[in-house]
Length: 168
Image (cartoon, rainbow, N blue to C red; front, side):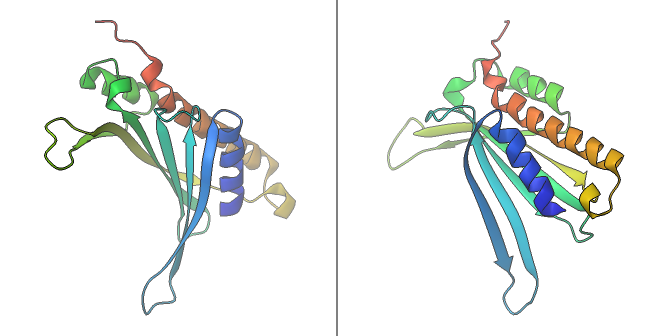
């Protein structure tokens, strides 16, 4: 079921943005048989260097029927044309549980930052029904596909957030 969710999410994103990489990350704890699988999807609106980047992590939960979707969207500070509070308010219009953070990177004796970004991040739990091909409900599957489509559109709205212009 997890694989179906990842596949449908990637298809939804590929229809709207440039998916630059999909990575399967497998972690095994030292001295343990516990193996954690995570998929990381990196996407941008365009292939441009200064395009915002969305990193989408998909973590399967222990119940096998739920996964956690964690989204981090990074914007170069130079792209943001509004005040931080206004930017965050616009982000909360898309998803009200979003968090915002920023950082500046300095190298050596530089007095100006060589890199500065603002990151929006949020997470959601997604229930994954059984595929009708394997005995699941057709109605539940249709609702699930609609939810995946909505999640993909939400990520794209975050990537396009810097296209808003400040009205002040």
